[in-house]
Length: 180
Image 1 (cartoon, rainbow, N blue to C red):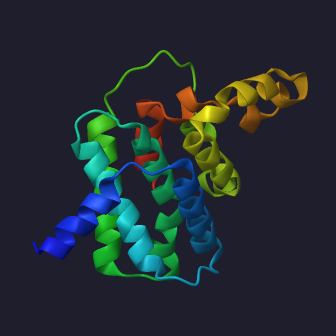
Image 2: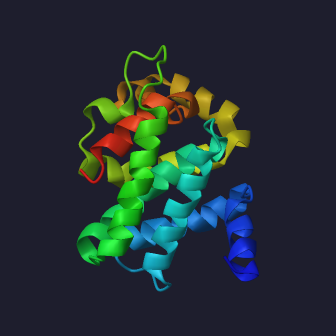
Image 3: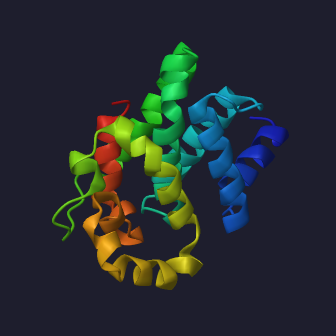
């Protein structure tokens, strides 16, 4: 491994700020919709690399949920839109690492978003989940909005909590269902 590769991995694994997450989430959403002007395969593989590093850390880091769900959002691009056997293998390996590391975790939640959400439908709202996870400073405002009766009636809004989306059981469920 060269010094440049080591420096790049260190940058990739540094904790991102909410603003940096916002930029990355925007890129991931553009990849999903097919109008990203950057190097989409490289961006998806960077996500897979960061996810593997996060999982390899041994305990779920706060960013593990963001990297996992980011790969759920962008991974199908590599598999279906721009088939690339090596990239597909790396993406699948990263998701397999999530399932192996977190799949036997137990939790007290009765249900998770991964349980009954068809992956295609869920992708429409996944950007909002990622934005919520990237902004822990907004949790109090978000919880107050969920207390509103109208928000509690919506399947998506009722499950829109950091605790449930970042739950290791939920992340392993999405990884297991990937690519859907």
